[in-house]
Length: 146
Image (cartoon, rainbow, N blue to C red; front, side, top):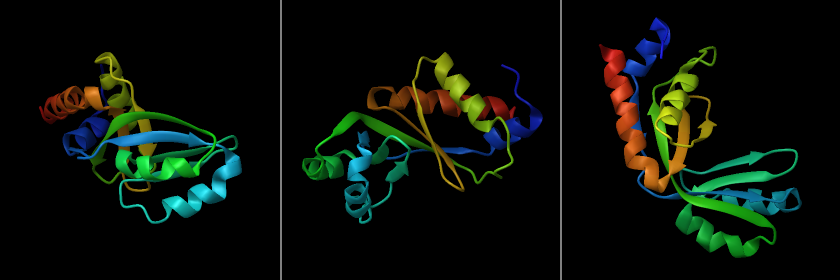
């Protein structure tokens, strides 16, 4: 895969960090939005809540979800997943960084659930794929350093 010089430099400067705890990806009904807001506000990192027009998506520690799910009537859950953080602060104008990451993981047969925060990008991978994903990404970083 051809990687532009700017993206190559950014990837070479990236540290891949595997979050130590398993996470769940959960979808709850918009009818339970207020409950989700209230229950999620006290969670420790890493957690995420996204309000879409048709659902509320949650990402949270598996053990936290196990404690909270009895509060919800209508939900779907997937997991366990592991979070990989790309520990580099990226300008929001950067184009193509996550495209390279997702392509390399796709070529390795690894499905991702991408999340971005203001400062960093993250992907969730199935727990069974986590070690392979980290190795593939570290290989990409080493390749980009050459």
